[in-house]
Length: 362
Ligand SMILES: *Cc1c(COP(=O)(O)O)cnc(C)c1O
Image 1 (cartoon, protein in one colour):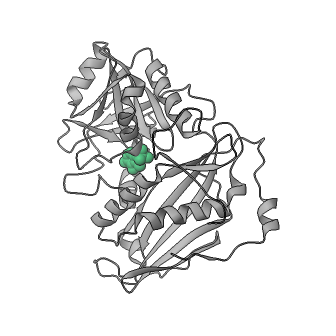
Image 2 (spheres, helix red, strand yellow):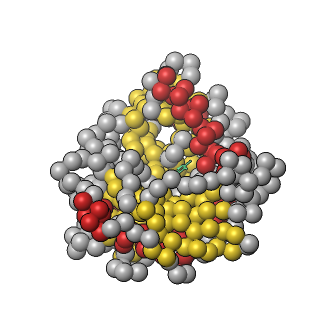
Image 3 (tube, helix red, strand yellow):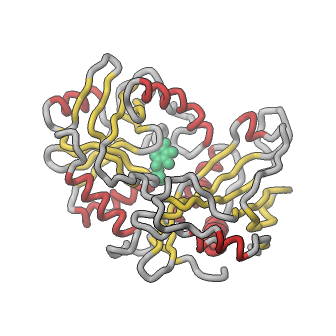
C-alpha cells in the first residue's frame, strides 16, 4: 500500500505542539492529521494522510440512516527511549475485521490497518503528550457511504483513523471507584445480534441506559443477558470480580459480550500476576448473594480507555445498594492496573509481540 501525503506545513504542526504542563482530558483533543482510504469497485485504495477536517458525505449515505459503521479503540505509549509504541494493535485489526464480517462490510488486511496507524502516528509524533500517564488514543473506524435509502450493504466505504492525545483516564489517580446499576430493564445485546463486535449502533442503543444510570446515581449500568439471569458486561467494559480466594472471574465471552482485548490480555498475564483467572457464566442472583455474604472482595471493569475501573458499589432497581469490600479500590485491582500499565509504558517487560515501535518516515 502506497500512502499519499497532503500535510499541513511543519511550522503549523510545531506551533500546535502540546504544552506538557497542562493535564489533558481523555479523548477530546485531535492531532493535525487523519488517515483515509476508500473502498470502491470491490477494492480498497487511495490511502492518504490529510489534515484533520470535515468529511464530505452524501445525505443518503447508509451510515447516516442505518448505522453501517464499526470502530476500534487502541493506545500508543512513549517509552523512556523517546520512541512511540503501539499496544496489541494486531488484536484490534483482527477484531475490526470480525466486526466488518458481522456488519457485511469488506475486511481490511491487518498489515494495512497497522501500517495506516503507524504512518499517521509517525506523521503526528510531535503531538505525543509528554506527561505522566499520557497516551495517544487511536480510533480506527469504517462506515458505509453509498447514497441509498434501501436497506442493504453499501458498495462504498471509508476507513479512517484519527488520534487523540490523552491524559490519564482518571486524572486524580486510581482512587475513586465507580457505581454500577444492575438493570433488568435495558439490554445491550441479544443472541444472534451484534453485541460481540464493536458496531457503532450498539452504542446508540446504549445511550438511554446510560442516562438512566446517571439519573439513578450510577456511572453506568451493568447489563444482564436477555433472560435477566446472567451478568453480561457494562456499557463499554467487561465486568470482573475477585472472590475471597483471590480468583478473578470474568463472564464468559458469549455472543452478547464484547471480547475485550484488555480482558484477554489480563488472562494471558495470569501466571505473572499469580492469580487464577476464570471465565464462566455468572448468575446475577448468586453474585448479589455473594456480595452480601462478603464472598466478593473486589470488582471492576476492563477496557482500553481506563484499563481497569474499580467498582465500589452496585445499585439495584428496587433501591437496594451493595458495597463491595470496603467500597475502596482493592489491592488486587490496583496490582493488575500497575502491572498492565507498567507493561504498556515500558517499565516492565512486555510479552513477545505486545508492543510495536512506530518507525520513522514510514
Ligand atoms: C470496546 C469495548 C470493551 C473493551 O474492550 P477493549 O478491547 O478492552 O478495549 C468492552 N465492552 C464493550 C461493549 C466495548 O465496546
